[in-house]
Image 1 (cartoon, rainbow, N blue to C red):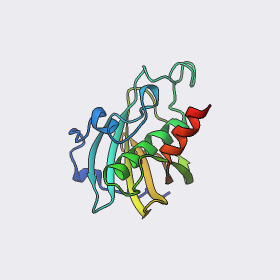
Image 2: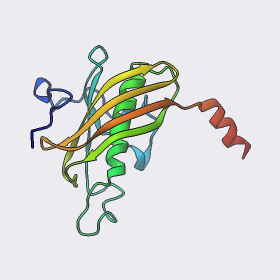
Image 3: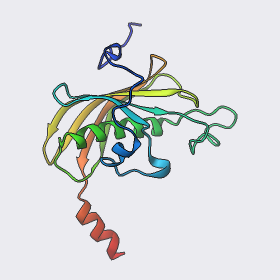
Length: 172
């Protein structure tokens, strides 16, 4: 099988220098506590439509104890969440959607190719494919561990009507 082409040449950047830490990520992404699935951002370029982020996988991640006992594998849904948060950071920082919050709108062509386990770093590449302001963003993503493709797909992000949602939640 032919080797999969990456969305971005990782050899062209310094993978040891973080340009956005957890505090900066929090200024764009709403997830907190166990749902924070990014450790840092290594690169982003709005003109290229590319960002590179990472998640350091640890024994302290909430899922390690139960997925799977004695063989902790990062759940696919958590890999997808990490990729979504990388895409969200990039799109929100560069105001691609014009929304207070970006939410999942759908996933296409998702493939899981390699396991991700504690002690590894999941490097996430996201590439903007389309941005329709106030409607939707579409990004391709790839997650790599030790240079091997672990997950890939296409993500659709939609604006979350935060004011309406807050009003609804307050009425309960």
